[in-house]
Length: 66
Image (cartoon, rainbow, N blue to C red; front, top):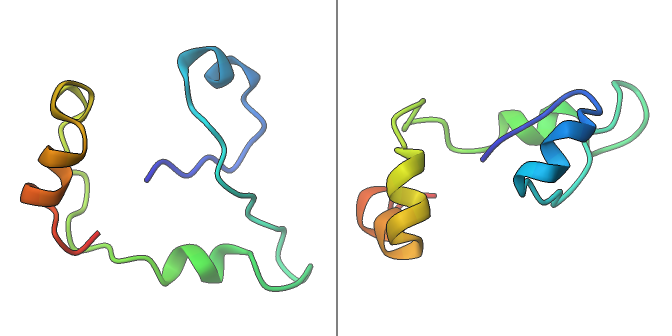
């Protein structure tokens, strides 16, 4: 999961599809408290090249708790 906290228009050209929006603190449920609830046990270990090449099979086999 890539979480971008700014409006970085240049990422749009790179194929990053938005799946939601993190709201500013105090503007309702949907802020960083939602991000904090995500499973973080894998840290930064996913390999972007393998994700691109092997897709969902790689993610299911290597990161079953996602």
